[in-house]
Length: 122
Image: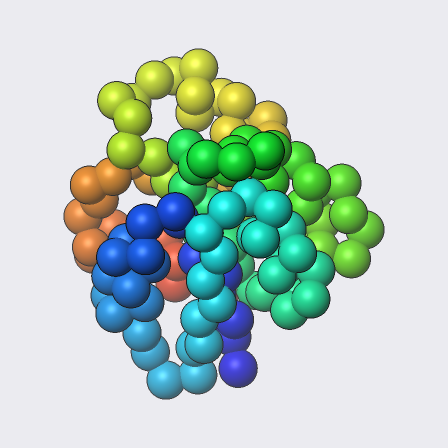
């Protein structure tokens, strides 16, 4: 089974991502905060993390990615950063520096996201 952790403070986005990324052999975990994402990643060791960058709480997506990269158990898990903010080169650069391997702007094209996820899981 392939585990995908979806991190977004909007539950509707999490559900949408589950629907568009569903395939046999894939299971999904959801977290609504950076703190929850780090804890769930440690507990479940997902194969891929989709991380919203702008979330309320002590840890936004940037901080959560840094915490995941700093942990020996899960530091190699691939992460895709997602944001609804206007595309900003500095945000993209910061996400990559925090540990993301890719950066996706919402709204995204479903096919593009499906292809990106497929490439990371193969």
